[in-house]
Amino acid sequence: MVKEIEKKSRISPQKPMISPKSQKSTELTRRLGSRQPRRPEIKRQQERLKLPPVQERLSPKTGVSRSSNPVVPPTGVRPQVTEIQQNNTPKSTGTRTRRATSNSAMTKSLLYAARLLILGVGIGAIAGTLLSVLDPTSRISAGASTTNTSDSPAGRGTGVAMNASNAYLTQENVSLKTALLSLATKQPTLMPGVFMVDLDSGVYVDINGSTTFSAASMIKFPILVAFFQDVDAGKIRLDEMLSMDQSVVATGSGEMQYKPVGSQFTALEVASKMSIISDNTATNMLINRLGGAAALNQRFRTWGLTATEIRNSLPDLEGTNSSSPRDLANLMTLVSQGNLLSLRSRDRLMDIMRRTVRDNLLPSGLGEEASIAHKTGDIGSMLGDVGLVDMPNGKRYIAVVMVKRPNNDPKAAQLITAISRTAYQQWNQPQTPTSSLGSTVPKNTVSTSSMQYPSTGTTP
Image 1 (cartoon, one colour):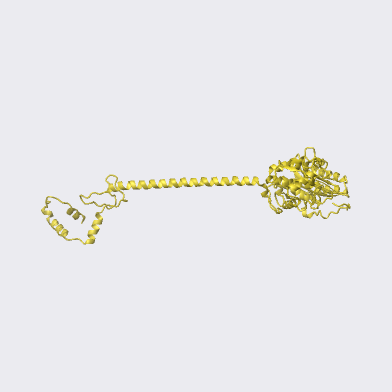
Image 2 (cartoon, rainbow, N blue to C red):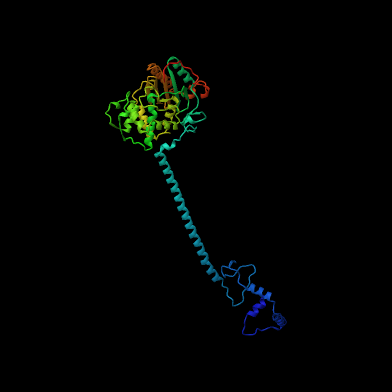
């Protein structure tokens, strides 16, 4: 049928010559051609004569489709494949170009957003660090008696946590405790309270450590801590001038009482005199400047101190101001670990306490190469000393000794020196802290509160 249609579509000016042999076939062809095909057949023939779709593979030389059943178009019909290819090529290229441009713009936007995010995180981290440095007091929480985890050696393992500090008490040094109790029994008129702790191992000694004693001038240690805490908070400046009025002038230790009323001193000078020479007038000036006794007592409680309280201004010869060996050891631990003060203020405080003039109590029991930052207290009924000891072997320990005594009994000073010497000699040994222990006894197994001391008839 295709051949007949092709023959019909050809227009020849001359009638083709037909041989006699093919006359019959020609007649048959005419008869068949005279018959009109059905319309569906014509439609199918027209569809078959259509050009192949653009997506079919084209011959690189002729541009004709290389399909399995090629259809030869009628003569005179020129396929438009080349035109279709030319029209499609720029469209395809333009689409790819637009897509590439869109992808490039999206990539740049994502990179820009990522850079902004990184910059924001960096600025936030820097701001948080600056805020924590500028306001170290925010690290203190009320009722800080909860147990915290510490990365220091003293905080490893399980143990009894000191009230407000990050130092953990691991086990009691029974051999040292026995030696100290032996010293105490030789002085039956004295009642010592002792609390010592090795900051590296958490090994401790507790003899009446939670008993409340008259604080005397040892109350100046927590006042000094509160002063530097307010310096860190920006509430007071080191160079701020403080005036001495008549209400703060106190007798007893110190030299400021001999200055004219109205004399002015820098805040740092007042704090230094309070600790170094135990000036009572300077102490009263700082108590007023820091908000009064009630405000300071409230702050002491936030540090976890339960027995420390100011009830009267200095010199407090009656011994109403109070504290305990454990309270003062806890406070020294907090300060040494930087939990209450900035490092700068902690270093200033330690420097002041290392210059304490009186050195016949804890310092007199130490070796020549050791150093101590400490504060003493002395009234008729109590003698004591609290200090942080640095030994030549690199270890540090805290020692607090408070002794109730008959009025101004000099044996109290001898006992404190003997206790200090015994502890230093044992903890300064080259072996590890555990090798110096006797049997390992948990704190709550040895009851220090059950120890009985002879009654001295004195009021603490």
